[in-house]
Amino acid sequence: MKLMFIGAHPDDGDGRVGGLAARYVERGGQAMLVSVTNGNAGHHEMAPDDLARRRKAEARRAGEVIGAEYVVLDHDDARLTPDVEIREELIGLIRQFRPDLLLGLRPFDYHADHRAAGQLVMDASYLLTVPLIRPDVPIMERMPVICYTYDRFRKPTPFQCDVAVAVDEYIEAKVRMLACHESQFFEWLAFNSGNLDQVPSGEAERFQWLFERGSASIFLADTYREKLIERYGPERGKEIRHAEVFEICEYGTRPDADLIEKLFPK
Image 1 (cartoon, helix red, strand yellow):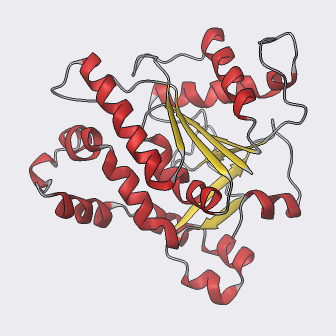
Image 2: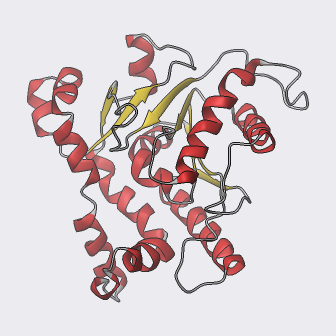
């Protein structure tokens, strides 16, 4: 089984799908995390070229934590648009990897890059099966199941949870992945949110600081508790602390219950 996530920035996939990706690899499957931009705008001190090189190295280390391939494309951060050239680049990449499950962002988000990355996946979906588009790469005979990852935005339409996955056993690995993105979580995002003075200096202390702040998966487990109980049963469902959640995109293969269990293993 193959899982592929396409996001806008080199840290977009870790928190959203890191647990499920780790489970794929642990069970003999493959996972690829893709960043469409090189992340070269996300810092308050570094020059763009230096930052792009650093973020690519950070992403590679993050993928190594769970044994996933981390691909960073060379498009400028904060300038991403859903144009034809990038769409066809992604079509080629998706066809080469041939995922069973393709995960991406919804095209409703505060960040223009996130919206563009989500739109690119949607626009590429049908064309994965069209031979005259990117004829250098064989088409996919069967569309993958395509899902959106969670976001909090409600207009024009809120996220709908179709599948909830418990990831308690992978939460440490997820935080280790996030901690690899030092330029972001310990520098830029801390600066941008006014918390730079709170970042510890030691590696172990930084990990613990990030672990304590990484409450998104706890929020998702609490918010979609009924989905977890429905899937895992009352006893286990009530005890799950960390979850990842997904909305099925209508543009991909529509999975039945058996396929959902295969693509989102417990």
